[in-house]
Each structure stands twice: as structure tokens, then as C-alpha cells.
Length: 219
Image (cartoon, rainbow, N blue to C red; front, side):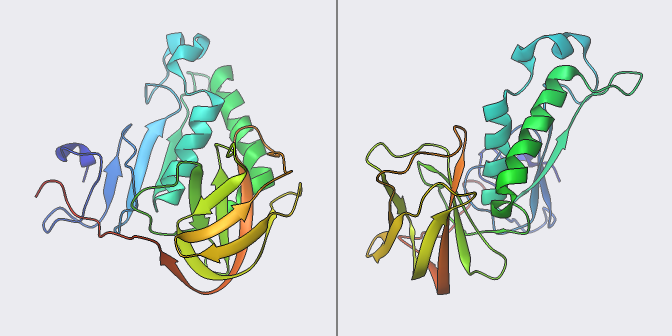
């Protein structure tokens, strides 16, 4: 069932609505406890539109396309991202560039996306997005906004074994505090200008700091 019937950005499982939700061009914010999918094109149209093919204003830029992917995955969703080929099956060049950009990023940092799970945060950190490995032994901090004070606060607690940057570039110091896991990135430059990934190796249970239940805004 389409999420357009909801008056809010956050969806919630409501009896009688079915068990799978699809949003179109309205990515939800925060973890959802039920299966959901964001369904959209790189452009404003589902089909081919010649004007969009030559005007980048009508197509997600590289940063927006990457943020879309990260936001959906971190909040537990599936992304169905479409392109708009012309009558000969050719993908518009501006959409092709976005796909190649996403492919390049995933080739380096796909470990933080493929086969991962949502941590269950109602709100993602200001610095970016957080995912975890399927077996729960790694946290992936996908840092879109590198902290000016070199301190990265992760709003979960767990038994920490160490941390490193995915793809190399430095080894941050890490410790667990009352309000979450603290990473010190002093002297480390972000390896990627769009989104870098810090991996935290952990053991045991992951506990969300100051967790609040997901509640519906409308019924």
C-alpha cells in the first residue's frame, strides 16, 4: 500500500494497512519496524523525459543520490532506484553519471551497505548514518559531515574492540561512555569528500542511548 495515505513522513504499522509499505519520492525519517521501500527515479519522472535528460536541475546530483541510498538503508528500507531510458534503450548521460558515481562509492564502501541491518535509531546522527553487520559484530559509521572538533559521538553502547577507517586512512581511538561510543578522529582526514566510513568492532549486545518507541502520528 502506498504511503501517500499517511499525513506524516514517518510510517507505522496500522492494522488493516497491510504488511509492506512503499513510498514514492518521500523518503521517511527514522527507523521503521516493518518492511518498507522507497520507490523513485533519479529524475522527477518515472518514464523518459527529454528535458530532464539535458538539464541537471531535474536529476538528483551525486551527493543527493548517495544520501538517498544511505538514508533508506540506515532506516531499514529497500531502495528501488530507477532510470529513464529513451525509446532506443539508452540511459540519459546525466543519469548514467549518477549510477557510475554510486557504483564507485559502493565499490569502496559497500561493506557498510550490503547485507547490513538498521541499528534501530529513531533519528540518525547529525554526522551521517549508522548501520550494523548482519551478525552484529561491526558498526558502520557513514560520516557525511566530518566533525570539526574531530569527535564522533555514536548514540549506542556496546563492548568495543577497536575501530578503523574502511579503505584505510587512519585508526581512530575509541571508548564507550555513558552517552554512547566516542571516536577521536584527531589528525585523520576524511578519505571521501561525500561520505567516509568508520568501522567499530564490537562484541555483545548493542544498546541504543535514550531510545524512545516509534509511535504513529496518525491512526
